[in-house]
Length: 245
Ligand SMILES: Nc1ncnc2c1ncn2[C@@H]1O[C@H](COP(=O)(O)OP(=O)(O)O)[C@@H](O)[C@H]1O
Ligand SMILES: [Mg+2]
Image (cartoon, rainbow, N blue to C red; front, side, top):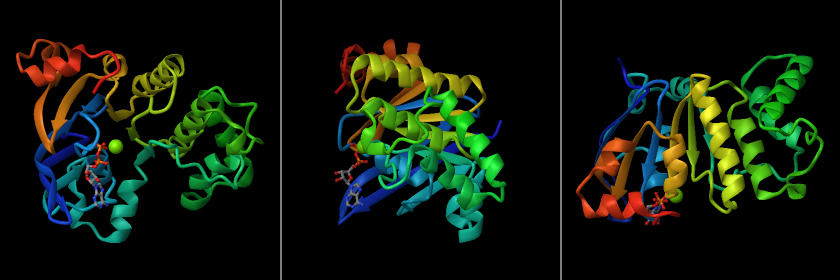
């Protein structure tokens, strides 16, 4: 089966410093993949390559078998519409209501009528438990609520692939668990998940497969059980940590 995402020998340097070094990874359609690693090891840069926000110095990014580096801008835009991205800080538009934040991609990328947009917005907010908060401004929300709005917005176009950068960052363990459960629900609905985290309890809840990134290289990858069974001290240190590195 063609992987939903394939990274092939990705290498990337910024200012002469190599951040990704020969990274090769596959994510199967409909599976959940967790990318683990300490801060500064290149996890966010890897996610940004997948959506074409960053282009590799060497290597290729394939989405559903298509090399996105070979696409014209309009073709890349079409591929990007199949992907939802939840940024670490949720990246909400602070001058728009919750409802308008979720409506934004629908207004930009579809020709849906206003009635249909409102219906879709309410359905997405309902799915994340915020059906009654559409009129609120982002500044009125807790960190967990902001993440939920970000998730509703990332899902607005019903993407086949959802990329999430550190879903639990800045959240308490209970709220983190609620966000994790929402991600698991997306997977159950058939969405392919790529989640960056250094939170091992979260990764255990979400992941089918994992990879550990260390200094820009993939040092281990496999199922949760395979990672648990690894003899590599680096993998062991990670898998046994409660909050992660
Ligand atoms: N656009 C950029 N320009 C220069 N350096 C960058 C850029 N993006 C990321 N980096 C550097 O690449 C390294 C990896 O960053 P990142 O992928 O954000 O790490 P993390 O694993 O914490 O998500 C860091 O040292 C970061 O400073
Ligand atoms: Mg990061």
